[in-house]
Image (cartoon, rainbow over all chains, first blue to last red):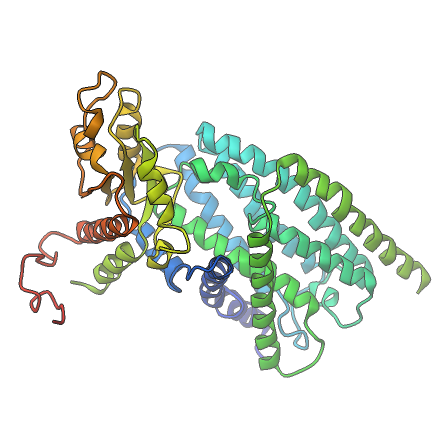
Length: 308
Length: 165
């Protein structure tokens, strides 16, 4: 790739792995998860184009107008989420051999990945609906637990790679600390994607739609698009961290897709095979297992750094 | 019909989201509605999904006669669903209050409070009949979104509607 940096960034933002690729891929992930769960329950499951039809249908809904600052904010949150995730996708080094990104772009990537979950909570608290606020509170507790683990995993990756450059973190010189951190990020995915057994807030969603209770029409469609992008961005991050170092660009692209689909199947199996945790059980799980895992990873990272 | 209208028509027909509301049912119809989502009937393969929130739904599925306590809930749930929307009344109780007719706790059949598009008869109705009712409601939903004058004529002969014999 001999394109200038700005052109490369534009291609990454708009084409691959940006919006043009990620939105259909996200729909495929959502459909894949639902279809895999359905197959495990001996059902056929939803049609392939169901997420696409959902979005089109929502665009055609006639929603009563809301006015004022609150209405503007409620419209702004999903738009920001979509752009934030598209930008996060553009930063993923899918082709590691090409010159990519800038120093400390890992920090920006984490911020861009974290922003949608914060906006999701804000959407619940801003809406003024008591149902949305209750769900947002439950979601906030889970997000706080999950994000602390996610950030610790990221710090571990940075320590083991001795860099905050995402391409360096995904570089081939990987040690046990790296793999444990990747495993911890994998543990974070069901919470971020609101799947079983960490779908505690979905217990509220099944009765009144969670923090998005007050959303309808185009804004809800944008949230669903953000959800699709979140699937690709998070599973894509894990894929980038385990991709092999060398090979042709098309092999990398195919492996990237294959790793995303593998994670979708794993998450579907986990969602179908487990019952929902209560909030207390989720906190206990994180405190006992994931935090311990990360403590080991951080220790391994620091030890390796001191030793070498 | 323009391409966008055609696409919208197709999308509304292929992804109806249900909001289930028990307005005073004995739970017979509710159990039959749930069995539509079981592996035997698997209505999800038609793109149908259940939503807990009426704001996210397209079709309101009401079961049971409307009791005095649920009149407000029925009207509110219906008004919360954004246009275009459809209402499916499941079972005999929604149509006539059935054995509960004349009870002082009953505020009449569903149609007295909100407009009903499809009635699915039976006490309780068979899941096949419920699935048929929901797919018809999805068709109504799709037709309702199409601008006036562009709607297909349902009373025209099959060949004119584009249906192959």
